[in-house]
Length: 209
Image 1 (tube, helix red, strand yellow):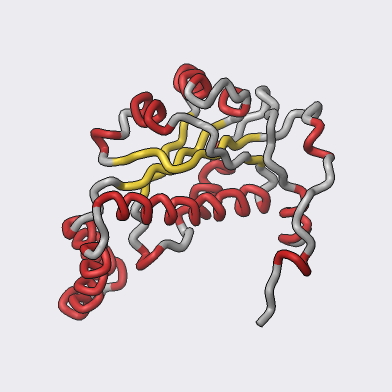
Image 2 (tube, rainbow, N blue to C red):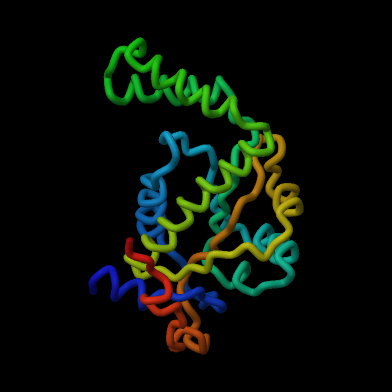
């Protein structure tokens, strides 16, 4: 199938088949794709938590107003924004560029200064908002890559972020929950799996200038 065929196949899965789990190869392929997601300046100012433990999934379901996707899915993928985007974080990123590309770190000083200038213009709250936005880009890659791999997903915002942070111990890691996506395989009796997609018509959605 083409990418368009696969995007038409995917939908926000409301009920997963609890008997079907992603195997390690499927999960790793999906995470490999998400690792390659674009982010502003390449900073990737977020972490990704993958939850398979049934007890934790149940606690997260309770913090997501009882939505069944969180316990019927094979895994829950949680995107969490960094809360401490500072000069040290940027330094570590620049060090990684120098090591990965085998370049003299001195040649990256201007780039490092530009990133720090942009970061320092923001308040701490705005930095977190910015990092949440970057996490959403990665979410988009996850949803698309999952469809390409024949894996179902459901991007979700309906949860108590503070409770998620508490359950997962994110505060001590300098993280806060952005958005989540249960992944797995659709249940045969999920009626929405065969429902027609409802989208704004192209002439209304797109503006050509």
